Length: 230
Image 1 (tube, rainbow, N blue to C red):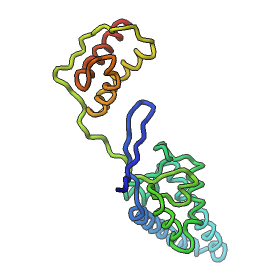
Image 2 (image 1 turned 135 degrees about the vertical axis):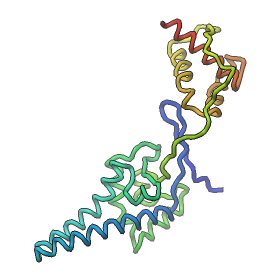
Image 3 (image 1 turned 90 degrees about the vertical axis):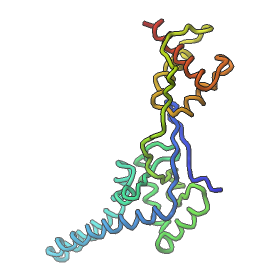
Image 4 (image 1 turned 90 degrees about the horizontal axis):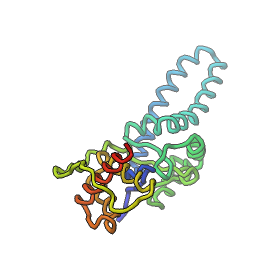
């Protein structure tokens, strides 16, 4: 089965799961952006027509620069054009980080190639050959179009038996190891229950415990470390 989700882990250990956008929502976003630009060009044409040939020249320059700057600026500064925002999409780098100016310029410059021979036919064919639905511009820029991440509403772990009663460490740990235990305790309220258990179970050989019991013990170790530092 086609897996349209991509997982990224931040330096803080928080795992993000993003859903890759397919051709249809991207095409709808392009139509919305096209409609926005069309209205803008019609208004500009009406105003500049009063200037005769000079105004016509300005209109052509306006259209030329707008076609290139409109998607580039919006994607580099906001992560999405108004059309993509309307479809709940955003453009990121392959690793889930914000799109850079260089990548935004590259992916939009290559729209001219993706458009060939007409209506982005080449870009569509290329996007259907890879799991991330990347057109040529995305491949070169190392970018990806995903659905904008929603706020995580998954329940966090709150064990009624949990206590912050300090428990001394069973053996000497380095300063870095102690810092990691404290960071885990501080981040628990921002991690899902499954993620907390996954991390705590990595220390099963040391704790001789797993799942909820391991989480509680790590929090007690953290309380002892903080008390010792104080």
